[in-house]
Image (tube, rainbow, N blue to C red; front, side, top):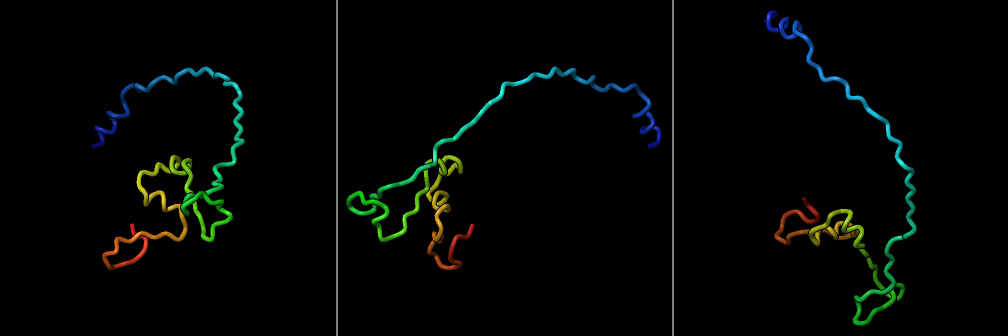
Length: 99
């Protein structure tokens, strides 16, 4: 055991040489956002398009941007953004959203 450890440290070091680095100054980048997001003004829940402010019920919107950012692929993934919605198979047992 002692001989193996000694031979491991006794030989010449074959370490890699430190790479020489040259610093490159990148140009300054300015980023601005002037979009306020999506705001739905009418809904097609009724038979005709109705302004949301005239609806007698709550309307929740999951925007396309949110769907893309969260990589949503199923309806239940999209509806997780809406408060008050729970998922249940309806087969008895525990109720609610159980992963």
